[in-house]
Image (cartoon, rainbow, N blue to C red; front, side, top):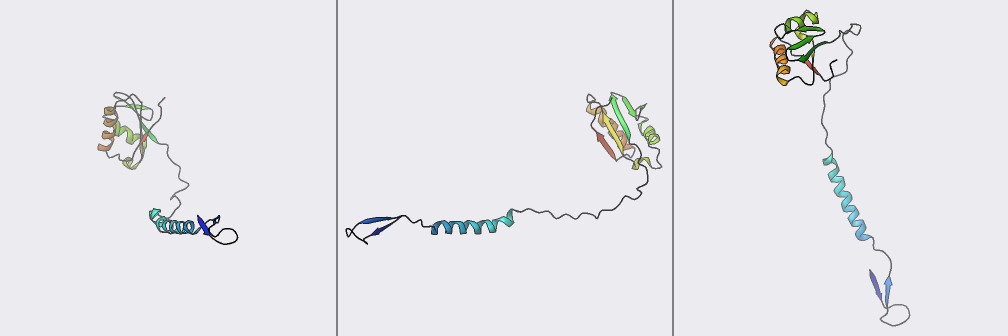
Length: 145
């Protein structure tokens, strides 16, 4: 706030108020903040370089897709391949027959289980499939009815 001593009429030591706003400090602060944000904005931007393969059409668009083959675990020692009940010893052979493929281990197998099936039973089926060369295994989370 500024004051003016003397001037105009009246007493020689009369004090008048200067009501003009001094904007110089305000402009100085705004310019400093502008520079800070201009310098820090590129550092805040995070980018990840992705090398994506080019899009291509499917190899055989007219080829019919096969229905998936499900391995279902109902209860302890109750397993199904599709709708056929199997045992853990015959699981791989019955699965190969259900897939009906020249190389059944290259096909995707979907495994699903009832919510009350113990983890040990579930892992027994997954281990049996992997021991027989089935590595493309998908896990399904749905109710079996």
